[in-house]
Image (cartoon, rainbow, N blue to C red):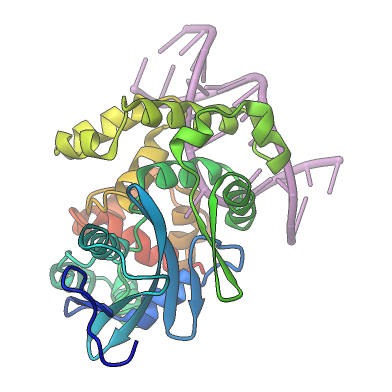
Length: 307
DNA sequence: TTCCAGGGTAACG
DNA sequence: CGTTACCATGGA
């Protein structure tokens, strides 16, 4: 390869993304390594590897590192075309929520003793997104009412059973199953992976809606209004208030998304504020009032303390 | 064995 | 609208 910069049409080598001031790649990596059963990305040292789907083409294997205050995005299995490069950059921006200005949140958080400490301890941690809607929906539903460790195991089985594998130099990388594949499954196909019948039903149903185009990321995004997006999600079978807000938070990165019914959040609040019992919903509402507009980040930082 | 874990639906007042 | 029964599954 020596010497050449690549063809005229394809820019060779890595591409770079600017990062916001309140950004710490290591804090983000720490979050990404929270489960050994995570199969949709791989962290090695100061790098993350992730396979991304390419519209009408072979998936691309990405390597993300930090370089001189920027994010460096390298393509390991061949240089994708311009469109795929843009898509990969866009994915990374959503994955690490790069477009949000955290300075306001940090200023508000500093007013509170506990959240102020959390934002210092995990300074630069971004809300880690799940940019793909189907993946976000499935992950939320899998995680309903079971502990996170078990949820990771179920997700891994699901991905390894119905997702695409990309092998590269002794390493295997996985892509999340496509809706059109899951749409054709039966409940009994998922039971052996230890899905409950109910969850299997929810996920297959949502896959069918997505495959048919009745539900899509664009359609939800175009509703624009937070309440409308929430209502549209809750209307779907298997999605209640918690799941809707979880998806608005992780997939759409809506700063107001607030899974207030979350048991983990309740435990995090009890732990962080050293409460005797788990707080009531009203107490959490009161606690979060000063952080209005930033509920998603406040929740994410409280969750972070549970890892 | 009981209780908990990043809930949801349906039925009932 | 707020409650309550029921569903489901593994781990501590």
